[in-house]
Length: 110
Image (cartoon, rainbow, N blue to C red; front, side, top):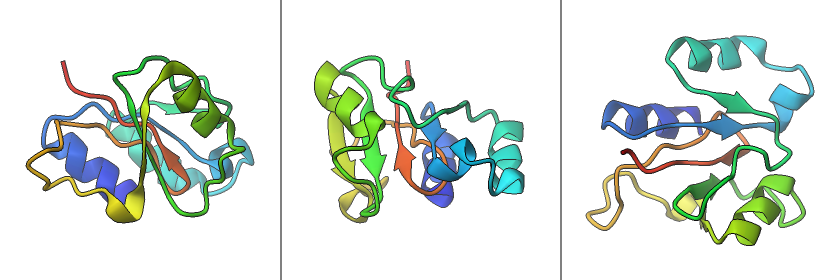
């Protein structure tokens, strides 16, 4: 998910994210890399999904029981599978993809 997040950010999207590995204290270099590029990272507890204008882009490894998915459903945010998401789609607004590997919570740019 990191490459997708960086593509969206480079196109002007606001990018935020979460990852189980972040919560578990693993892959610190990857998260530091994203932070130095201005990507806010959140625990994967649903706290990063706050409004229905956000789009959660999740890998196939992210189950419906993950708090980010539950939060997105609760606030009415779109939930998209990363395999079906394209930052090149003409119907895709400028988005921000969330962090690294597991779940992404893209936000439309202002």
